[in-house]
Image 1: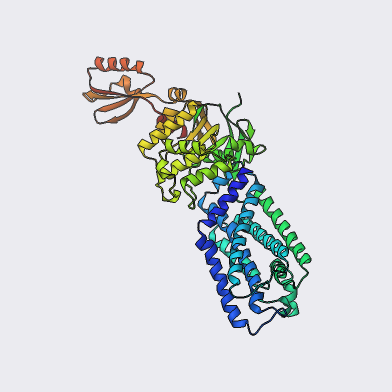
Image 2: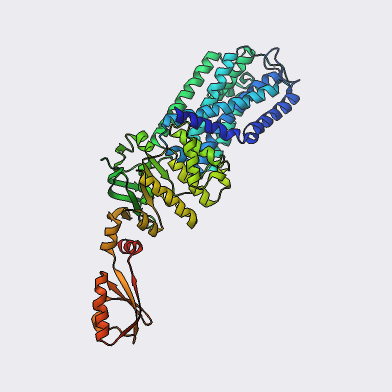
Length: 251
Length: 297
């Protein structure tokens, strides 16, 4: 297990060494969303009874930051290694494909949780936040980060340059996070868009994560977690198969 | 004894290129072996297959008896590869890179050996420098250190001295020779043919994906190239009896082919009989470059 642990440690140190860019920068961006949206909408919108809009917004923003940063961690590390050629340092040693997967996904979870915790803690300055069910919060946080960590690996394996990688980030990950109920409850949407939202796995992540704080959700949290876990397992299976076959890594 | 490297009927096709065409090769344990050939001959492809960076279309490769596909973990554990491309991870220092590489091979506390590697590769004072800030030659030496960090039984060096200055090249080869004396098998590709000639006991030459020569260095030199003698003649006229041996002329200097040095005396005798004086003479021994050029032309 030394190989797996070393690769995990290397992946964590990689983002830690450039923490201005990988932790502080997304934290500031997310807090700006919070500052602006809460200022503009606080007195106009109340999604859950007795919960201020700012308090409602914080868990959504925390989860959005976690998902985007978990994805960015595995995808940017892998695409950089592929483009610069230093991926050989990982391909030459006797590391198994599943060790590769576990190390990258685990490092993505660490980065996602660190950024999420930062946003959450800073958010307390804006609003009081109850934590009704901390284990649900943790389960959705870890499942979400792991899912996006695996998605980051698949995307970086597929992408052949930075442009293609950025396309996945900007045209898939960002829209799915923005359209998942970060800023609203899907019950405020027309029926058609409510139905569409239910095909977005990010919706269940944000809804379930929010349940951990307020004890209120659009979908029962058990159902949400089941859907998230099934998505995560399917994505993991695909990632492991690609890694085992050496897809775009071993010619 | 199990060969250090065994390559059996290996073919590698890329979409429209047949890069390796049935290569058979065995490198014995403890050998210092050279893999030579012009650009595009398939040297790096063969190394990539051994290292598991690439997969053979057909055929079988093994390192110390471990199949590179079926028993890939063991095959990689006993192999150290210095890649040809100057690659590095911009995020880390030299020591961090070497510690990570040790960890990937399952070694937790490897600092004494890392320190020895750094010293032998003249990198001790750069241990805490980011690899991105090193010169090309230093980056190359870091790659060598990374390949040796797990003390592999078989070390493959793909153009290890490109961009390394003469003095450091000598010390690098001194270190690699020491590893060879200690029992490590060394396989190298190089563009500096004099390095292969000096260091390697056996040589394989690849051309367009096929092995065109596989023999000891001495046999290759003896069998594929001739000595030459350069004679400055007065008057500058070559007798008819020697015309068949003429390989070139520059002014008064005539270059004649000799199978061996014993043929020199009859040449001088013919010149004396024809009243031609020799005012200067130089015997040129064949080198690996002559063999190389003859085999790959």
